[in-house]
Image (cartoon, rainbow, N blue to C red; front, side, top):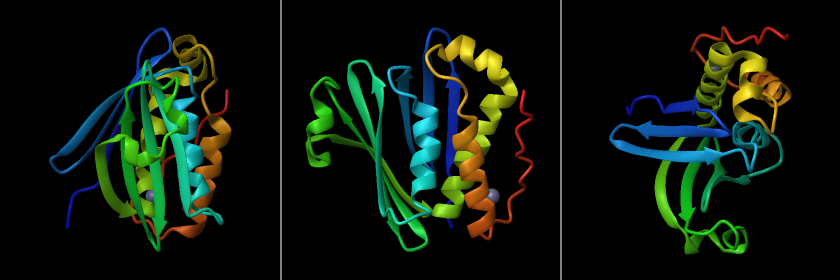
Length: 170
Ligand SMILES: [Zn+2]
């Protein structure tokens, strides 16, 4: 069995973050700018897969690169594909097939949700809501998207990993 999905969200100054994703030897690193609300979109995108949606798409703006996430539900699993496009000014209208496939893996939805939550919680632990706002500038920490995904994950998934995941609300 492959190891757990690894995901890091390294919040930097001035509305930048670095997102690292890895599974085994397949690794990718993306810069994320505050032109979109990246962490919120990631939480909401995964949360969307618990409803009627079989497919969620969102992108990070890596100025000028578009980093497009495509999450496709396949039963209990999610096929994750991340494509890059050289110019975000035009590419959101282009089909996935026009992008470069930068990273892909298929993981259980429960594992993806857990790892995304754990990563988002780590960001909260490190920075808090005020610190997050100071660094990310344009959007507050996505408390609602976190709570929604946490509720869905705990309700629908049989997950044996620890869930010490309550955000202290400021
Ligand atoms: Zn879990």
